[in-house]
Image 1 (spheres, rainbow, N blue to C red):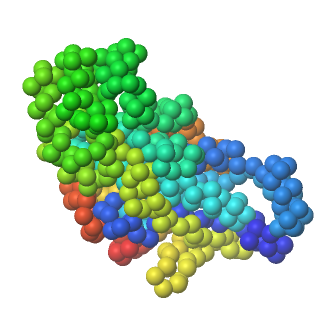
Image 2 (cartoon, helix red, strand yellow; image 1 turned 60 degrees about the vertical axis):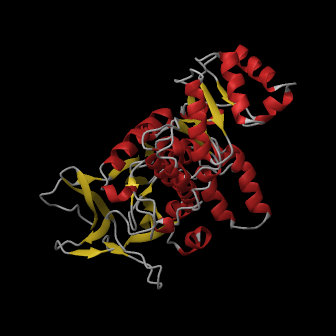
Image 3 (cartoon, rainbow, N blue to C red; image 1 turned 90 degrees about the vertical axis):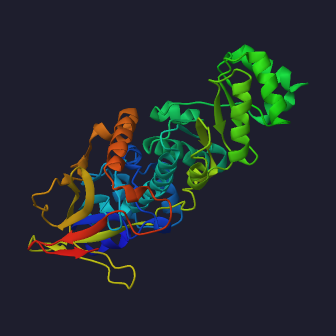
Length: 426
């Protein structure tokens, strides 16, 4: 497309692209958008170097004119969108890219690949946080996804409310708190379980967490408390019928005087398994596969469409795809979250102008890039901390129906607002 646009003279036509999702995965009640900060970090370094240009030339993929354009590329347009960590719904215009056609179209895969994955993780993680009902969760899924997506997943889960990650690179790069536990191999390495426990306690102190289901849980707990004393920090369970085992373990720990010893469970958990443990004396959860794979929705179904272009007379022309089942809505948009008594009640998307009303409407757009300059407020560890804080606020204002885990309608209805004030349900 870029090559052809440079040839026919449309490459520099001013355009607006929009990134959005037509629906929520698996009929969930809401989604959490994540990845904007990571996308802006990627955009900062998005260049075509000698190696990339040489490959394109050798494979004869594009013309010499396009190679030169790519060699000089640096995004000079503007991007605005929902804040990272914001709740979103079908048709929410999550990102708006304003620039030339050439600049906008070259960013499509970069932006979609990041936001589709990060939002899938954040959306699943938010449901798990809700199910945990205040108990901390650790992201432990690095071994269940790609080496780069593992870092992205830890970041997204933290934004959505997880407390920590086992991925040290996520801690180094994004400031996500890190934690870890011993594996079964640690116990199997030693001549006895007692030797393994003594060694771990000697190295890390009595407030460490011991893995107790390598052999016999009951015997392991007795041994652990005997070695560490009643001040043992915690035990971890990674198998068994958790609701039953957890209750038995809590009773045993209390009988042994270890009333403050925490119980962490990590056994192929997802939001439904966590919800099933709501009445169990679990202190914290460790989640792996489900969170890094979006708990059944590894991508968010987001798309990137051209919605407006500048005409020769300088006016803006809304454009839209009309394919059955995949239609888009043309024109630049301004979204707000309508609230009543502090609780979100609807998603309003104005077609061209901001909705005006007597309600407590919360604007949803922030500026990420202005004339090629990236806003540093959304980058790095500070951007992650800001996104995490915003996510907690955005989810807290959703109606209680949003907490339901079962399939159903979105918690908020989305409406398009026309210039005459009329509403159309999205």
